[in-house]
Image 1: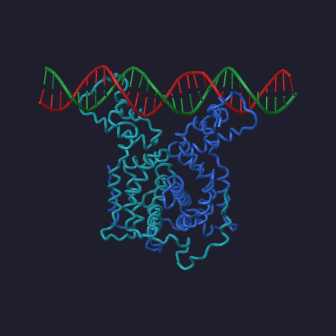
Image 2 (image 1 turned 45 degrees about the vertical axis):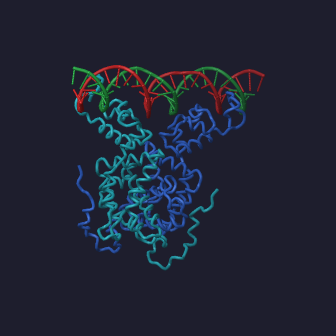
Image 3 (image 1 turned 90 degrees about the vertical axis):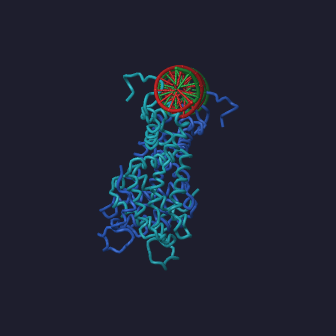
Length: 232
Length: 232
DNA sequence: CACACAATTCATCACTCGGTGAATTCCTTC
DNA sequence: GAAGGAATTCACCGAGTGATGAATTGTGTG
C-alpha cells in the first residue's frame, strides 16, 4: 500500500519486489473478471500496486500480457495426468465419471479456474482469445482424450464433451446457476458423468431414447410440426 | 449512402426515413458481434448511416439502446410455443429431441440468433447483461420447461438442460467448434437429444453407466486415486 | 400562414484507453 | 567506488468513448 502518504519516490526500490508476479496475478484476476477487451492495463497496474508503465516494461503490451497470464501449464499437466487412460490403454468404462470428478475438483483450485474463466470470458468478445481457447481444447483435450476413441465421430465426441463441460463450467463458476453451483462433487458426477460417457462411447447416430437398435432407420414423422421450418 | 459527396445538409430530411429501425438493426448486429462493452455507439451510428447523436435522441443512451435491441418477444413466443407440452400435459417421450431440434432450427433464423448471441457475448463481460440472460433463462425457459417435471431435482434437471444447451449454443454459433458448428440438425438431434431426455426424466442419482438399479450403493473404490482430492 | 414539434447535424466536454520516452534510483559487477 | 543496467515514476500523446446542448430543417396541426 504505497498510495496516499508517501508520495512514491521515483527510481528503483530496494530489495526484491516480485513486481512481475504481482502484475501477472492482477492480470489473471482482471482478465478473468472482465475479459480481454474490458480489462484495462491501468486497472491491472493499480491492483498490482504498480505504475502502469511497468506493465509495458515487463510485458510488451496488452496482448503479450494476456498471453503470458493465460498460459497454464498447470492445467495442462493436471488434465494430461487425469486423462491418461488406465495402464491397459483401452478406454475404461468410467471415463465420463472420472472427467467430471476431475474437473469439479480441479476448478475448486485457486488459479486454474481464473485462467480458464479469463480465456472463456475473453473468447466471447475477442477473436484471438477465441482462437487460443479453440487451440487449447483441440490440442490439449482432444489430443489426450480422443486418441482411444472409435474413429467415426471421434471429433464429434470430443466436441460434445467439450460443450457439456463448458456449459457446466459456466453454470457452476461463472454465472452460478444455483442447483449446480453449490452441489457436492459426487452428485455432479452422478448427474453428468453418464452424459460424457455416452458421448464418448455410445452410438451417437441412433434414434433418441430407444437404446434398442433396430428401429433406427425410422424417422419420427409428424413431429416436425413443432418446428417452424420456413423462414424469411 | 450519404457519406462522401453531399456534405449532409443539416436539419430534418424529407420523407419517412426509418432511422429508428436502422439503428436497432445496427445495434443488434454490433452487440451480437462485439458484446455490450466493446460495441460503440459511434460504430452503430456509422453502420446505420446516421449521426451518433441520433442514437441518443431516439434512445436515451447505450444501456437503453441495448435493452431495446435485445428485447425478443419473437424468441419468447417461439420458445413458448415449442416448449408447450402435448395437449395431454404429461411430459412426452421425446422432449429432448424436440428441444434440440427446435433450437437448431430457431437459430438458423436471421434476427433471433443475433439477439441471443448479443445477450450471451455481453453476459460474458457485463453484469447487467448477465442478469438479463439469467432472467430470460429463468422466466421463459425454466418456467415453461420445468412445470411438468417430477418434483425432486426439478431445478437440477432444468439447470442441467440449460448447461448443455448453453454449451452447445456457444460451440455452434459463438466459438464455432468445428464438428458441431456445421452439422446438420438431424445429427445434432440424434447426438444431444438423449442427453436432455435423460436430464429431464431419468434417475440422476443412480450410479453412472449401469442403468440397472440395484448395484447403486457400491462406491467405485480405488478409482479416486486419479483425482487429487486435497487442496490448499 | 404560423406555430409547436420531430428529426437531423455540429461542435464540443470530460474521460479512459494503450503506449512512449525520458528521468530518477537502486543493484550488480568490475 | 565507478559503471552499466535493471526497476521505477512522471509527463505526455493520439485515439476513442458516451454524452450534451445548441442550431438547423422538415412535418403536421390549427
